[in-house]
Image (tube, rainbow, N blue to C red):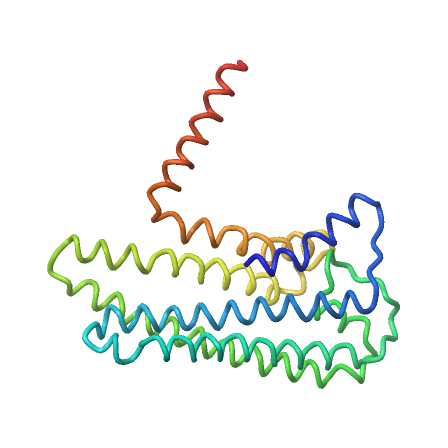
Length: 247
């Protein structure tokens, strides 16, 4: 999450403060690589976390066998390695395309679909094919997550005690909220109808899916922390007290 924000926001803030829109070719390639790397790795880790919750709730007696420390390390390493190879392949493929339509991106950071719009019409089919494969693979992970949560909720509803159901739901709901935020913003940004496309809307959607989920994810996961809850409530109370005092 921190990597995703640090990839796009600092450069955008720099350009805004200095009233410029310039970015070097190398910097653009680095931005694409790290943004894709952080996003894809995050997606793989969310899928692994879903499997972790499925095993812990649906197969609790096999948890230590299926998800011991070695298995967790292997899955985490596979997620990071896959994200690295995936982003390297996308970056190399995208920046090997010749540009025939200028070098101005209608975006606040270097984004692959925006770069493809500048590529020659007959040269970007290879990257489009790779994107289609990526979408299919991502959809497979999405189906796995949905299937896992169907099994999880079926198992939770069979728990006899209310306290046990509450504990299971409190474990799953933060992860489900993060996954939903990640999917909904990305799907709406990339699969919206062409009739809805406009420069201002595309910019707003890019901010929505590239900045908002990474910024909210740590807060969502930390809401089970009692100290954080107390700090949030205290901060909200201070804000409301200051507004009343100013009136």
